[in-house]
Image (cartoon, rainbow, N blue to C red; front, side):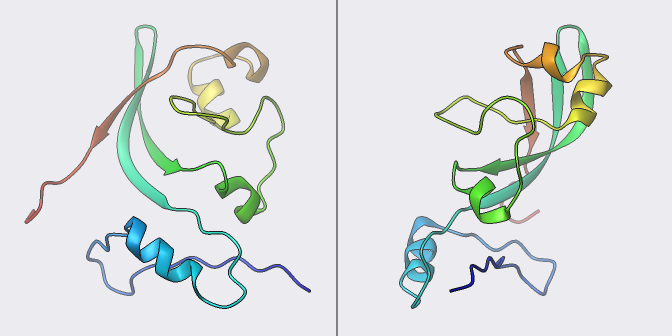
Length: 116
């Protein structure tokens, strides 16, 4: 049997709240084995004294499996307060991929309040 992955997105530009309830409903669809939420936010990332704009993707540990994306260095998510970055973030901070693992990164999220 083939494995498929699909994203649930709006055709309109308004925000759709994917809640635990809606994920549970999707999980009830025949042949759905896993669901994984994915939220995208404008943010800033800081390492030491350097800060830059970035896009932050909030996911859970199943996202990598479902997306088919491989981790080339380091580990997938194993708990809370962990992040996975791409090599562009390492380059941004003038770090090698190997050296940035284990560094403390600070993220600042920019979210709109309801009605904006």
